[in-house]
Length: 213
Image: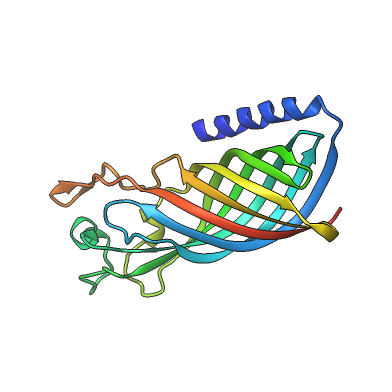
């Protein structure tokens, strides 16, 4: 609920700022690469590349604008050293190790961004993003319930740049930092011990898009 209120207040503040200007409408689609990792004790470090795609809708004034998007993205996480000991109660029957096992997490994200025009073709973007899990793919069936590892939703912070190109094309890059712990079992008893392991996602995104009008 706190995440929802945070997003609502952010939208209200950005819209108030933009409404004082003469604005134009931007609508389009985008695709790109989603490079992500979990900042946690027992996951492998290193960004893994996956797909992203979605649509954007924005109001842009002479200096400020607001943009909201619906983005489907994929993230791959690989279990590292120590995962076996702490999360062994989650293993599927017959599995005694998941080190090196990978899980693809599919997200639907809604970023709400303030656009600040630095140059006629260049915008700085910043704002909150809410991400909800669509599903978790455990191809090797290592866990009883792979989706149960993760919280269903999380709040992120977004900072990036947007470049308007000729013929309605655009490109951009973003850094997204997780603001909330996505481990649904942090603080939960597992056997004779309690899990103490906060996870926060870090993501780099590169995208290209096309404005419909």
